[in-house]
Amino acid sequence: MEQNQTVQQDLAFWKDRYEKARNAYAPELEEMERRERLYLGEKEIRTPSGTTAAKSATNVRNIVFELVESQISSIIPQPKVTAVNPQNQQNARKIEDKLRNELDRLPMEVLNDQQERTTPIQGGSMILVEWDSTGGGHCTAGEISLRLLHPRQVIPQPGVYELSEMDYLFVELTQSREALEKRYGVPIEETSPLLEQEDPIAQQELVTQIIAYYRGENGIGRFSWVGDQVLEDLEDYLARRVRVCCSCGRTLQPWERSCGCGGTKSREKILRFETPGTDIVREGRETIPAISGTGASRHPTLLPYYRMRRYPIVLRRNVSVYGKFLGGSDVQILDDQQNTIKKLATKVEEKLLKGGSYVLLPRGKTIRRTDEELKVIELESPEQKAMIDVLTVQADVSRDMAMLEQNYQWAKSTLGINDSFQGKADDTAVSGKAKEFAANQSAGRLESKRVMKQASYSELFEVMFQMLLCCADEPRPVLSRDVHGQPVYSTFSKYDFLERDAAGEWYYNDSYLFSTDVAGTMAGNREAMWQETRVNYRDGAFGTPGSPQALLMFWEVMESLSYPLAAQMKSQMEDLLRQSQMIGESGGKGGEENGMSRLRVQNEN
Image (cartoon, rainbow, N blue to C red):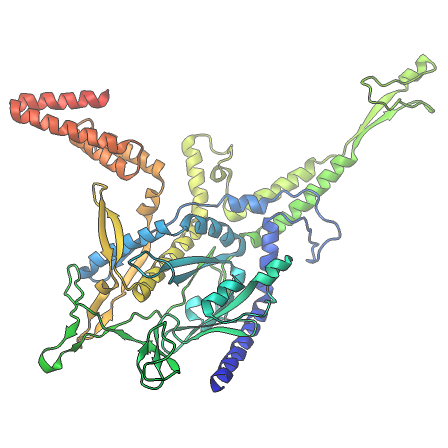
């Protein structure tokens, strides 16, 4: 009874904090809805005072959508890890390779595509890093999972604008009722007031889970609920937990309902240390024995569990704005120009549609209104023919169109986007080099956004690494490439990052510098890399162009860049090079030159 009362008190405490935080964040949530509508091309027109005009736009030139889409980049930054100490360089390379493997496994293309739009629209977006205990292969338990969070799903602590400085924050997740009941083992009867689903079936099957992340004394805590049902209350949510018998203290297995001593009550216990069952052999580092000490002082080795002390949420800002949790929104900046363009476009359309041609006829005469090609007008005299005329009435819209185009140019100039950057015809760029320079100048205006993207990915890589140290108990396979582009297989083990302090105690060394690899980003553009490799070969970077060694190196690089048929060409070059070497050994210098000439001829053919 006391435990239930404590849980209800905790629920009331967190509900109160959540309501206060959401009310303080309500104006920003309302703006988010308006930004989404502007991006989707809403027809509402605002008056100068900010109220909604009685008349809506009939035709919207959606410059918000156009300019946001012009900035979309499919490039996914690649990890770069630097060791603080020289003896940890090998570990730094392992982290890089493992993170690259994770980027290939995870749906990063989809996540990046969603972030590329949400970030400029709302000023920021978030990624939630989780450990999926149901994932992994036959020999590994669990794997990293990434979930994109819309800014409206994250409610920050009022008055605090940096995640690292917040004492708590809230995450709203729409989940399946059945999935939550299976995961937490409790019935969920309440319907969520936050769900905006008109479908009654969706209202019945979906609920909103509120998760509170907070800084506890021993790590990051998590408290979540649906309605009045508490789902979890974990002080250190990533800590290892076991059930122990309240009577004898024995650790119970997950399937045990009672203890062998007859006890039926159990309590939860947090494990801070683990004891390896066998010696841990580490590559290039000392072996960690399962039993430490000698003689009577022999005892099982105690290894600490890694503890994360940061929130598992990574914020990507569009551009930094002082005093705001999110960054600056492009949609908010374009609001005035978009509103004016909607007014002008509607006005132009009305002028054109209300104009037209009028037929002047003698009084009393009409035109037969039929579907025939020729229209008949019955005249009484030749003089009446001269009285027939057509009067065209059309309003002048040139000034309206000029003003509309001016607002469009203002919007592009505000974001630093020009025609060359959009791939349009640019009259100011009279040559290909000038067009490239204009695009680069525009790209320089947008450099801040790329820097913020790289900064968020650097933080994401660090959180993913820490999650592996915290939860990945088994060694994980890692695939990398050598200098010849051949696959190299190794393992990533959290135990490789264990070191001893001055007192001889084991601790996890996570002191690595995380950033993004600019060269790795360029390597993601295969077409550009193919062209760059051809230029390097032609300039003699691989040796004398046309020589067997240069050709072999060229095709090795092209194979590593997944160039079509590069593997076959490399194999042929290796065979021909061996043949030329055999001829050279049998026929001396003349034979070697003959073999090399044959190789060049075959390559040219």
